[in-house]
Length: 186
Image 1 (cartoon, rainbow, N blue to C red):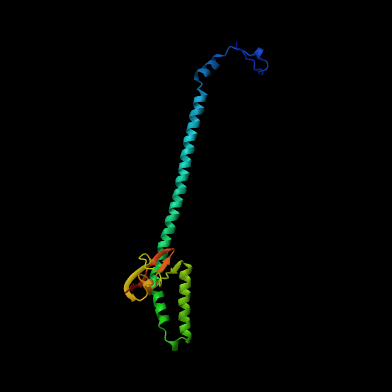
Image 2 (cartoon, one colour):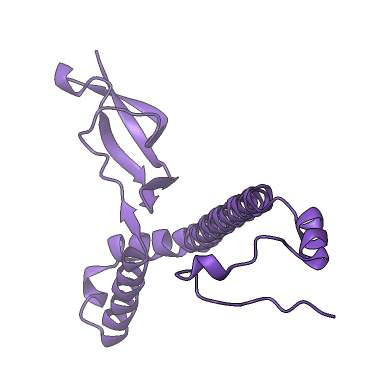
């Protein structure tokens, strides 16, 4: 004869059988400690979350680092290209400075001067800035001294008195120092 258990609402506690069946006894002996399993699962969840957050931070750092490296490579490549164009700009400046007066009204000369202006405009838009040296105190970070010139004014001692070759900044850094003549008070 099987014993049937009353499954009644908890409000009717008088009818609940207080003697558990053998099956219920077996389950209670095998049943794990739920609070320990919950704590173990929470610890594992925290460990996974921590690992995920670290991986996410490492990925963000990697992206930032590679973007900075890519920008630096681009800046160096642009700098190298602009540096190679500086002799062309120097030649155009020298040609303009030594242009005979009788040729200044020729159309082809105007065309060459226009090309020189366009080249300067493009390079300036890319970040090229000419260094202003004449009258400035000598600074080895920006100037390359190749000559001394006697000066009468003591205020010009150790100051740039002549610009022999233009220097340039590119992206805020010296691309080529200005080749200068330095004043030396007598």
